Image 1 (cartoon, rainbow, N blue to C red):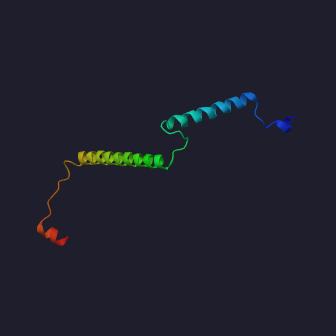
Image 2 (image 1 turned 120 degrees about the vertical axis):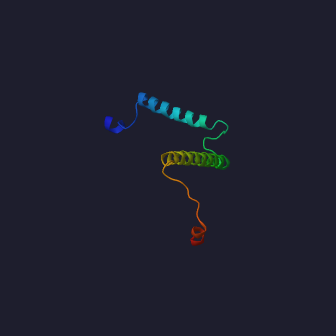
Image 3 (image 1 turned 30 degrees about the vertical axis):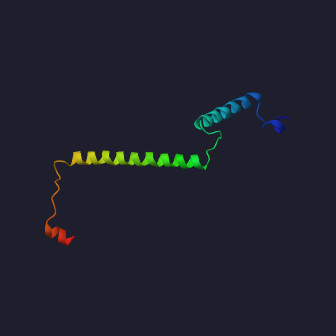
Length: 92
């Protein structure tokens, strides 16, 4: 009998698995508060993608500014910008 029904979960195992599935379902449902569907529709996906793009670009700009400030602080005394002369401009 154990060989035949050994793969079937017991009531305790099933209760644990069901609780995990219910917790996951609840988390997904709470993430889509304003939407009555579990998965977002095309319009919501487009909005989420746009928000992600904006956050990514803002983060990239902030990171670049931080890196530039660090670079400038490290090379402030060593590097000076020299205006190109007319000869340099003609060569370019």
